[in-house]
Length: 393
Image (cartoon, rainbow, N blue to C red; front, side, top):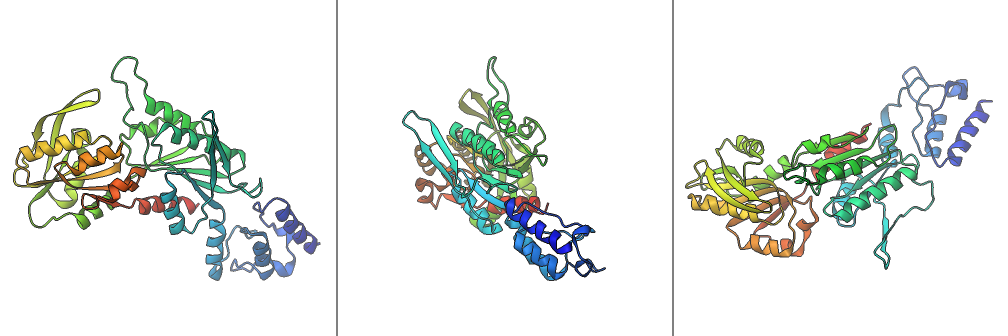
């Protein structure tokens, strides 16, 4: 009777593409029962190995001892990583750090401009019960639409949970209405992301250094949404790439938009802060004044991103006009709009720019070839730390 039950369990595993099976006490013979110490017996271990998934003891305890590595390996089999084409480099690094497989998405564009996607599956059941990690910076409308379409497909093909890693969130500066009739695009996009179907576990959205924290509150539904912080990798970049000993230095802002972040950086080094007051007319900015004493000091500007480089360059010039000996910049996102922007930054008063690789432009040849100006630090440790905690579940 017990042997028949065990056989049925294994056949059931094979027939359902390795979906999880929990052994019950009624399916065990007396000589196959767990010991008082909660150790799984050989017969049950063999069943687990054959089925490719964890088998729990009937009393809810997991096996101790040498099976820890076995259980870890079995858990990683539940995960698969995909990415947008532009963020393939980040997905590869995540997979290398976590020992996860990197899946493939086939993309085509038809003559009429329509986009075609196919998750490269050997069998239609391959995603059932899997946890999918998707890495994609939404730099363009096309990136956002692709993420939503693939997210819906991951759900339709039976994935257990979807974890969307969005290192750079586009449209994040359009988070509020200023003029009558303006569309709050960041909120609309958050609602679109929230529309991706979710299981009872919900979808998980991981963002890095959002322009404003309010963006998390625009998400709707039973989703987990978290902001990750690049501060530690940026601080390491400052220590590794800037001379902090030959002259006094201080941290500063490119405007009054992120004073608390500037103060956080300054506090870590025990130095002063300065700020720039600016006026903006739609997409044109002008510096009004500098707040703080910068004369004779190396000024390190922090900002969450630069796209056109205009605000950063004008702020740097304002600090130099007030007597700063040198200006460097620390950026969470190097979201440069074009190679022309790269050229303007190279020719600007900013001596060194330290930035993470959240945005694909950080890998542009024009940036990589100007390594004296641009120092790119890797955001992967921040992503891996968050994903590792989620994988403990």
